[in-house]
Length: 124
Image (tube, rainbow, N blue to C red; front, side, top):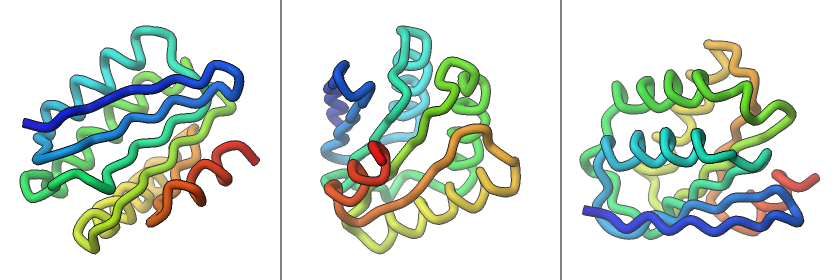
C-alpha cells in the first residue's frame, strides 16, 4: 500500500499529490474522487517519482481518465501534470496523455520526468 500525501498551495491554486511506495489503482481512484469532491485547485501535480507502479495497467489509466472527466467542470481553466522517474511510469503517463487527447479532455495533461519542469508548465 502506498502513501499519498497532498499539499495545497492556495496562493498558486496548486495541489501536489506525492505517491510513495507500491500504489494500487484503487488508491489513485479514491484520491481522485475525494480530492475532486473537496474543492479542487485549478492546477494539480501527481508526483509518482517515488511510486512503484507494477500493479497499474492500461485499463486502469482509462478508468483514471473517466474519473477525472467526471470532475472536469470543477477545474475549468486548470491543468494536470504527471511526474515519473521510471521508464515504466513515464510510459504510463504518455499513455494517459494520449487517451486524454483522444477523448478530447477539457483539461490539458502533460507528463514530465522532473517536478520542477511540471510546476513551471502548470503555472505558466
